[in-house]
Length: 558
Image (cartoon, rainbow, N blue to C red; front, top):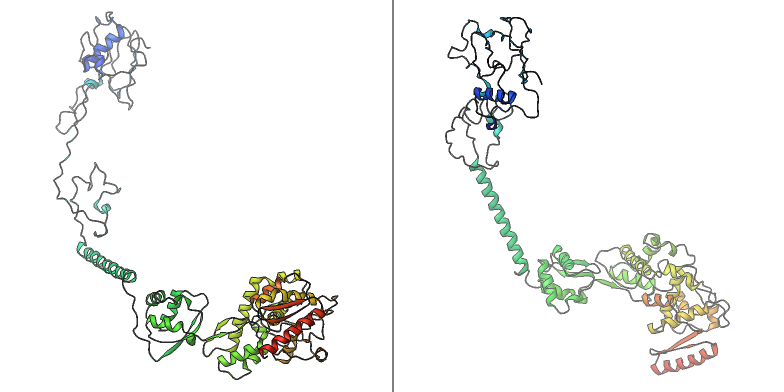
């Protein structure tokens, strides 16, 4: 704390706080004396004080002149007469800190440098008002902002209807001179904002056209939906024209797939009409795959009836157990080709028809495709090539053999390869007259193949192999002695073991029996009739069964 000034404390000076007494310059002086001396008498009350210049302040008032915010304290020399500082500037550019230099007893206040006579700098009308003491200063009244003239409510436009300009073109951006309080074209008092041009008319026209187009699309698709759900599908009338077309229906095709092919070839008018007619026909679900000769422009009901008629189905059906020679002849006949054409193609192009590796390279084969012309029904269109039909048959055989997994199971049966398993199945197919005997016939084949068996000594001795050699199909093949004289690798009365390859094209049942033979000791069998097939272990027992068979043949006139 200085000797005369107020020491620093935690409470700052609050000149405008009502708790510190009356406001104004005098109130601040009284507060200062009271807080500095309490109730004691001011020791300087009787001392006359010299003010700045010719101005004096009487007792009871502050002993120090009002401190200019920019004035620094002027040091005094203690014990010497007061010196007047006439040219000393008081504005040093700093602020009052609340601390004033102590004035010694009996010292005179420095002369007011502003008390000298000089021009009145505040007397002109355009001059700034003179500075006021801190207690009398008042905040300058804010200039009342100019009232904006009411603008007409601008039509609210979507950016789509405007000309694409945004508000930055009106001077409200961040460019210099365009502040909110200063000059420039602000929101208040600048140049009036230009009214934007709009394209409402054109935009509305575009929107109207779009909405009209959308409504038309909704109406169209709604009609199509209603027509498809509730309306009758378009259809031709009658049995069709005189123009015919061949349509191939793939295996497993459903109603809509069949209908799509018929529509594509001009047979029926719509898919919906055909599917509806197929559902109404009790036998409609019995339509098979194949090639159909149909008329164009048929009603859906007529098309369903035509496809249920076997006469219109151009399919080549191959029975089980038929030899390749028979199948070649059927293909020539179906395609109206010269006899022997398909056999020549099979011999020349066997390696390009899709045979697996395990089915090639076998010596002494009479036909390279024997066993791979799988018995089934195949669509054959007019004008098709023989190799196309053969490829379909080989592909079907590969698919069926893959399902039965003959490659893996052959070894478990003591066979060298799936080729030998397929040969066994071909023998079961032609030797067993009836499917219910296939499993036992298969066991006879495996028993005779045993090289140490005392009945056949490893020979099969099947009449079917003799018929294959002679390309015949008869029961009277000759005596055993005559048969052993036939020199052919397929003669099972002479050779031991299996033939070089299959002797027929077996079906699924025969293959399954070859994979799963019924356990038993049999080496012989003979079919007396359709309901009776007898199996025997010894040759003597077999000869008795053959006698019974001959009697049955005489009764039937065979």
